[in-house]
Image (cartoon, rainbow, N blue to C red):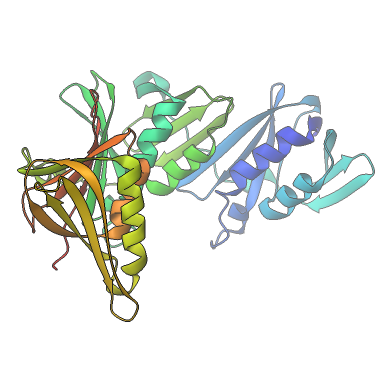
Length: 366
C-alpha cells in the first residue's frame, strides 16, 4: 500500500475512530486502527466489537493494500505533524509515515487479523434522514437521563421508538426521565441505542454536516455523517412503559423566565452540596413567585426567588443537579414547571407552540 493524504484530513479521521479503539481488551488487535484503500479513498476504521467507527479520506493512491497500526501512537504522531501532504507506505507489515522532514516507521499487524466490520442491509432497514441540528438537540436532551448502572442495561441507552405517527427518543435512570418527539414516521421502530454510541455520533457533527442518516435493522443501528459512519449493536431488552410516569394534568404550575430559573437554581445548588443536592421549590400565588431554599448545615442557608405566573400554591423537594441538567437542554425563553403534590413527579418543558420535549424529575423525601 502506498498513498498520499493531507495531514488535516488524516488527523481528523484518526482522532474520530481512535476513541472507539479498545485499550481494555484481551484482543490486542482491537488497540489498532485499520487502514485500507477503497477506490480513490483511504478507509480508516476502529472497533471494540460493540461499536465500529469508520472514516473515508480522499487520497492519491499509488498502490492498494491494508494494515493495522497502534491507535494512540499513530493518532498523536500524525496530529503533531505540520500541515501539508503525508505519505503512507507499507512494507513487510511496517508503515512508513513521511511528511517533509519527518519520517517514522511503525510496526503494524496484518489486516487479516482485524475483525470484519459490521454492515447493515439498506434494502431491508428502516431509514431516517434527520437534520444535524435536530439530531444534536434531541440526543443531547435525552442522553443526560440515561443510567450508568450496568446491572440494568436497558436503561443505559436511549429508546428510539414510534408512537402515534411520530419517532420519539426517551430515557430514564429511575430518578428522572426525558422524552423528545423528533420526526413524523410511518415505520414501526423500537430500539435502545447505547449512550456511548450516541456520544460518538454527536462528536462527529461539525459545521460541514447538514444531515444524519440513521438506519436500523433487527440488532444494529448505523449513523452516516458525510464520509463518517458508526455502526453499533442495539441493547437487547424491552424498555419500560415510561409514559405512565408522565402525569396527564398538573394542578400546580408556574411559568418562569428560563434565565431566572437557571440563576436561582445555580445559587441554591451552592448551598445544597452538603445535603445531597436537596433544594425546596415553593410556588406562591399571592406573590407570584417561585422560590428555592437550600441549607448547608455548617455554612448557612439560602433563599432565592424569581417572578413567575403561578396557578396554585405548592412545595416540592428536588435534586438541584437534576434541575440544572434539565434547564441546560430546554430551549425557549420561558419554562413551565409543574407538579401535583409534594411526592408527585415534576415536569419541566418549554413554553411555546411546539412543545416536543418533556423532562420529568422525581421528588426527594424532604
